[in-house]
Image 1 (cartoon, rainbow, N blue to C red):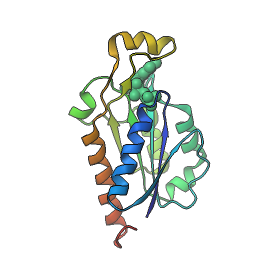
Image 2 (image 1 turned 45 degrees about the horizontal axis):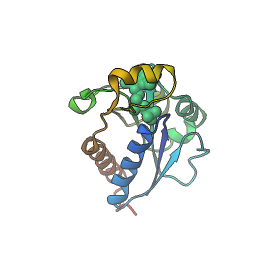
Image 3 (image 1 turned 135 degrees about the vertical axis):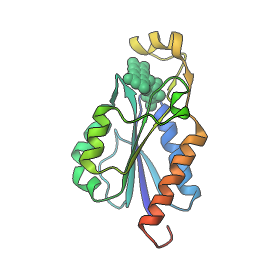
Image 4 (image 1 turned 90 degrees about the vertical axis):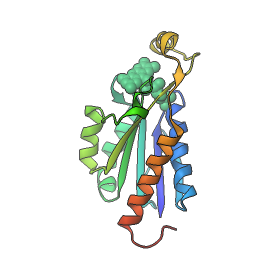
Amino acid sequence: MRVLVLYASKMGGTEGIAKQVRDAFVDRGLTADVVDLADARSLDGYDAAVIGSGLYATRWRRPARRFVRRHVEALQAMPVWFFSSGPLDPTAAEHDIPPVGQVHSLMECVGARGHATFGGRLPADAKGFPARAMAKKNAGDWRDAEQIRSWGNQIVDDLISLAPVSPQ
Ligand SMILES: Cc1cc2nc3c(=O)[nH]c(=O)nc-3n(C[C@H](O)[C@H](O)[C@H](O)COP(=O)(O)O)c2cc1C
């Protein structure tokens, strides 16, 4: 079983989550790769995919939206999960936060099996106008390693139940 974890990240927070999801898969015996959506070209050779993006103004970043739209058929043919990273407070670890409308529509397009919202990260030295202004009040790291690992483990359980042979 080979899984591709794809991410769109501007400031590195979502990249870190994607790598933790990949690590959860590898620890359970799956083969998993993690790739920046800016470099992703195809899903060839993979049995399942996880796609995530940081949220900016209640939207996924463009490379994530574009990849899903360009690969609808391939994604429809495999199990797919989405995640978003954003809230700069503890809420994402406290309760399930549903996908924003745009991500919900993309999930419907490809028949995604699930979605998780993870807390975000905003560096105190964030560059650029809106980020720097936000960082004065909202800098911090709300990514929850346990929540991320547990979500990765749920996906492995689902994949095992979909393919009754042991993952390789
Ligand atoms: C300009 C700006 C707009 C943002 N808009 C949202 C938003 O609409 N919803 C949300 O939950 N988080 C929002 N965030 C928080 C980011 O999603 C969070 O910092 C995330 O971890 C960024 O991911 P990245 O480090 O992978 O780029 C925003 C952050 C910035 C700087």
